[in-house]
Amino acid sequence: MATHLSHAMQQTGFTLVQVYNRSEEAAKTLANSLHCRHTTQIQDITTEADVYILSIKDDALAQCIEQLPMGSGLYLHTAGSVSIEVFTPKTARCGVLYPVQTFSKERNLNFSSIPICIETANPADTDLLEQIAQRLSKKVVHLSSEKRKHLHLAAVFACNFSNHMYTLAAEIAEDAGVDWSLLQPLIKETAAKVENMPPLEAQTGPAVRYDRKVIKKQVDLLATPSLKKMYRLLSLSIKKYAGLEP
Amino acid sequence: MATHLSHAMQQTGFTLVQVYNRSEEAAKTLANSLHCRHTTQIQDITTEADVYILSIKDDALAQCIEQLPMGSGLYLHTAGSVSIEVFTPKTARCGVLYPVQTFSKERNLNFSSIPICIETANPADTDLLEQIAQRLSKKVVHLSSEKRKHLHLAAVFACNFSNHMYTLAAEIAEDAGVDWSLLQPLIKETAAKVENMPPLEAQTGPAVRYDRKVIKKQVDLLATPSLKKMYRLLSLSIKKYAGLEP
Image (cartoon, rainbow over all chains, first blue to last red):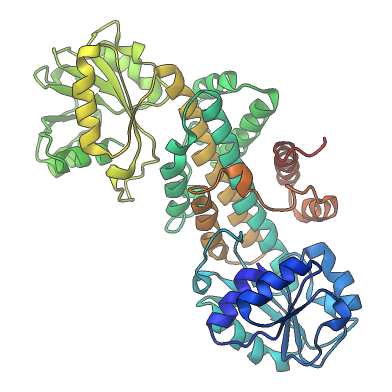
């Protein structure tokens, strides 16, 4: 996320001052691509920037903030699941800039279509954070820490869990000697459908009409008890959401 | 599927002779859009076509074939889970044309990018079926009934089950008063990622590093026992596939 976000910021006209990373190589690589300074020492992080963005693992944030030398600028984190209050022992000029997206270094992303959820502790900082976010994205939303936590949880289902369904699908196909890439247009269309249709209405397949004969045949076909269990649990859940009797 | 397939066939130069559907309105609507005849009576289905395509529910196929007046042309079905042998009591000139896609009437689809899996019982029919499929799609694959059954099962995971993850995600967001459409770019990117990357490598999130603290916090946040159960089962499965210790 730090790589994507800092490049998107530079491309939209921000001046990047310094990169911090515990790894010399990671810090240097990113700083070089941004033409700015870097450090691996938390005590050497500048205190003279206007804005500081902490884009690190959710569970490392509190400890990092504790050790951070503090300036008078605006401190932001980018974590979906962490409250804005993580900053309050150290500064009141704080906020959150949470891009709702999955980031991998290998993928190029168009930041302007990524929704950004923002929150500030101090109303005087709202304009500044809004300006930053709006320069990066067309879709900026104010969201409290409490709501952001739920959105982040929803994102685990929408992204991490749906990707795991792709993993299981690929395994089932490949174990039968079938090239799993035959499923790629289906995966793409399934995701594209819910851009115009609530997912509950887009649901298809044997479970939504709870066709017991097909379901039994498919469970029998699955190779392992854990796949059978997964298939049954998901089919029952789909049935429940379809409003069929238990 | 019948609507999409017949229109794609007409657009690629085939002459559609007749539409059969038990519902007069459905038969008429499709026949009118194709400028061809229609019938609601199975005994009135022509026996003079070169090719017959049975695009009906998997579990209705056997009964429909039993009642079908037979001509000397090639009979095809489009069902992922049904063996080619469903035809053998009635004709040896039979085959399968299975497009690996999810179809809804409201969505326009580019048929040429949909993989089509084909199978014929009679080697003399292979060329004809290959020609039909290749006119419709750039991606035509020969697949036995046995392999197709597994691909169809894999498609349930890739499409039906991943769509259910979107349903749960939308519910979690909306229940917290957050517009679920904020997740749409994430859903799209998650699907796009696996076009270039095996899904196992694309996996992200708390489960893949089995971060117990985050997982416990998220389970606590979920509103119902069934969502908690789903979250735990999926996280454990992701962990298993990541090769972490049990």
